[in-house]
Image (cartoon, rainbow, N blue to C red):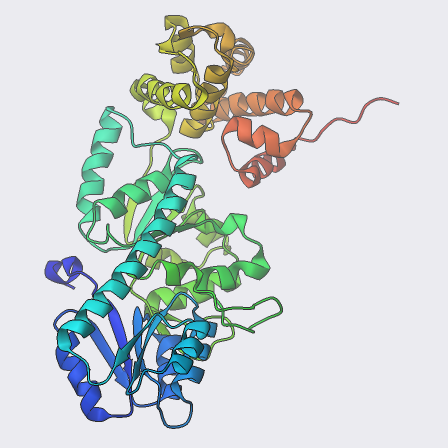
Amino acid sequence: MDAADTARPIRPTILVVDDDHGLRESFRLILEDEFEVLDVPDGQQALDIVRSCQVDLVLLDIRLPGMDGLEVLERIKGMDEQLDVILITAVKTVRTAVSAMKLGALDYLTKPFDEDEVLALIRRALEKRALEREVAFLRSELARREDTYEMVGQSPEMRKLDALVGQVARTTATVLITGESGTGKELLARAIHRQGPRRERPFVAVNPAAIADTLMESELFGHERGAFTGAYQRKLGRFGLAQGGTLFLDEIGSLKPEMQAKLLRVLQEREMERVGGTHTVKLDVRIIAATNADLRQAVAAQTFREDLFYRLNVVRVSMPPLRARRDDIGLLADHFIRRYRQQFGKPVSGLAPEALAALSDYSWPGNVRELQNVIEGCVALADGPLIRLSLLALEFMIPDARASANAAGALDLEEAHDHFEQQIVCRVLDRVDWNQSEAARLLGMHRNTLKVKMARWGLKRSEPDR
């Protein structure tokens, strides 16, 4: 695929359903300069197209062989209630209009029709659909931004990363982002999407670690109505929602082997079938995956498919941990202070020098997410213009943690860091009475990550003496 292809906008697809071949050709001549046009002569073929293709609008004749237009309309709405349908009729009657509107038709075209009238009606319908999608997208973005942060940093590591993002974004190549939990891998994926040719299309994120295994296939690929108990209507799935845009697969290493095989097929063939469906859906989705695990080790341990790893590992981007970009700690802290002082209505202007020094000395095992949580707590508790050392949740950790690190002087750097991190996790667990969800939140890591670390270290709550 050349650069021109990647930058070409994706045109809306209109399905024309009419048994009159001449009328279908007329619609094609009117529409093909602006839209992708599909046409079929009967209702059954129309339903097959709606099942298998991404359709933005349907022009549907009321009088059709076999199923009439009203029945086709009802079945289309049963599959995708958001898909707009404009009916075509020779005679516009009140009774037909009422029946059609009850079934969800958007509007009418009465034969014979004017070319300008057709284009104006279709443009209004597609603009309405685009606005509805945009509103839904903006709402999801606003909700998600509560848990994310902007790309902040002037360190050499971040400057290199910015340059790499600029290069990667111009292509549609699959990207694998590696890095520890809390470093901002999803934010990096969003930056790639925003700077690329698909910036006007959806960015859809999914974390397999947060979805039950029994729901994973439906969540990714969607399902048809009636596919299983409780499937009352068709669901597009994350791939369907990301059509034309970007799908971000976070913590891809947590995907179970069965789903790895299904994902591999989708990535290879660029097509999928919804759960309970019998038709193939063509996909136009850019894939960005992320992991905090070493997938090469997972491949060696046979817990991650080697062919899927190579399919994902086309362009590899590494997100540096916060301890590797200490020059950015002050900038990030100021960024979070500005956010939370506005949210909490507090007159906090910055950090006291000793507080900034303490933040800069800390190793941040939870990375930027942990820093964000610390600053949020400090701003919430602050009663003056500066955050002082006494407010920092780290204060009780730092002296003992440093002593532990000194005591571990015989250890190499990796072992010393691991020992230091274990001491912090133990202190936080004790502080929250071993509530793992709360401890993970304070540490700025996923609960599953905390559980893995606890298992590796053999951490268990001591039973009280009886």
